[in-house]
Image 1 (cartoon, rainbow, N blue to C red):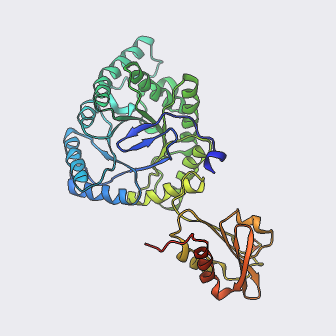
Image 2: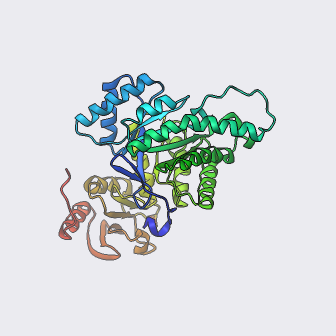
Image 3: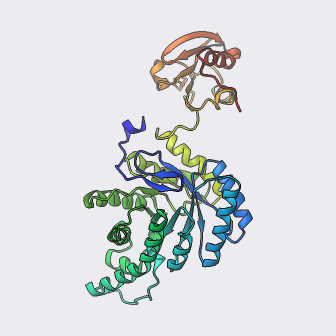
Length: 392
Ligand code: SF4
């Protein structure tokens, strides 16, 4: 359905370990651990737990060479325990040496263009001259080239990860603190990589404000199209916070972009245990019809017409069938507007009145049963169709 409803931007497939990002591959779910990288054993446990929860790519911060070394130990231990989860080193401040070191073993290196090369604060706000710009670009190229060579040597990926909150001073002066500045920051790094024939790139433009994040990603997609670039985009709303609003912000930003066909991998950033991010990612993808990892339940909100206690029945139906990944199951209080309201679910449980419910297969009523026997009868119907699996 997703491919029909949301035509996806054409991107190249970039390999990150044993996972591909972009191309025709499903939108990839990723996150970042919160344990300190020096606590090797704790990091290993968290990586494995997140991977078991469905995290397909895991990022680990490497602020110094000491952490870069620890990440090597972490990766070796994760592999020794039989997990092939792709690991990404997150590199920020003056990260040239660190990025080169980690490129020797990780599956992807993430750099932040705003922080990668140290520049003394200019302390002037007049526009940059052409020679000043060229001087900075030359400094960036000098620092980036060894990283490019190290990534090329192992055929690994690089994420050019621009953050709205850490744009370089030059870009802020020339473009303001804007989506245009973010896009230009990414393009500068892309051009250097391309000049050295390195194209295993994934791009991200993150912001804590959803409208900024969306404007930056839309502009990036448009600019890449104009320039004939097809790099996958990683989506996220940074510093979204915690709880319900953080999930809504992330869904608004990430979901809107995906609905516009933009985005090849996502991270929901929560100020919580990062394992909580994973189901939110999968729910966004499922809601958009891009990946199906659980039963799609369709249920009406109930109203004065409802023929049974909808919330408790929905709970029971879910408990009995939630392991049947791939099915769509509807629970409707009545059939007021016809079976079309069930959104073409595979099965329907619909209130008829008088203590009776009607079971549907697709749009067709199959039988009426007393309400008390409804859930069991639904399970029997699914079994008789050969679509039942025992829960694990
Ligand atoms: Fe009300 Fe029926 Fe609509 Fe449910 S399906 S909200 S019970 S009218």
